[in-house]
Length: 380
Image (cartoon, rainbow, N blue to C red):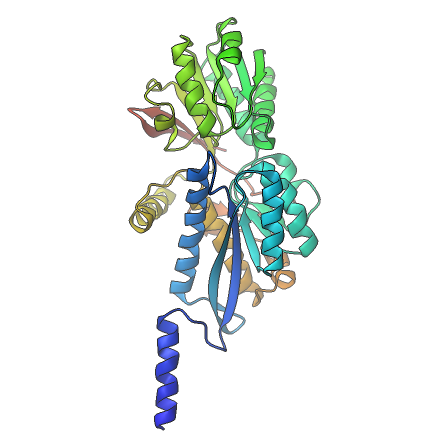
């Protein structure tokens, strides 16, 4: 009897300290994002979204196939580099993860997706928006945000119809994301009856834009669109002001962060920047998003940048499919994941189409006033 009591006490201690018991199952979720480099603040935001989901799943005591699941996060840094991204993907495959959330960038997500596909491991991206990501024929690839066709197209139409842009210039950073969203923006501008007066490009590590901005200044633009991330957009806005370019500045979700005003170092005018974030909540759903943001701030002592809620939902969608399938085996829960329909997440209702794209994906348009981000509208 004493021996049995000791075992019970040991078991209780193991549960309290997070040690999995023999009849528990360990579920490994991989996460990859750039936690070093120029957009490390976005990568850390993503990783924290995954950590929050893992902690919430473990607090709930999720059961999968009659066993208590202990979720573990295996986090890797890809520095936003495609080669490092595929190396990180292979590392997670070798670690036998049950599913992957990531990567952040399209440029790393696309090459990594083949590694996961070859291994049969589901990959749900919270932020890769390049259309190619889900159009390679891989059954393992999903995303919980709208793609660049929707993102760039909406911004292009907004530039012409709402901002009344007459002379529009476009710059991209030549990454899969930046060039892709800029191409879709340009298509939509043309579709709305206007043309792009100037198209320039830079790279995602650049800091000096004097030459391309001087070239753009010559056409006297009223709208400048940038396809890329906030780490480059901030200094670009600063240099536009120095050169006396007073155009509206537009961009996709890559620039639409809480850090952008700091990166622009006080050069942003109120309402000057218009950006769109893939995703968006309206009405009653706002309460859930506001609670998430408050809980996130309390847990990490940091505000949500952009994608953390989508990482959270991506992780939860994987766990939900495992529970419904009664298995964490990728081969068994993958077909259930593919049929995800009507999942109520923090970022809205998630259903996947036959390609793995989120159905009826929303976009939220934002601007900045007093260095604070303000919502303009949610569009679908």
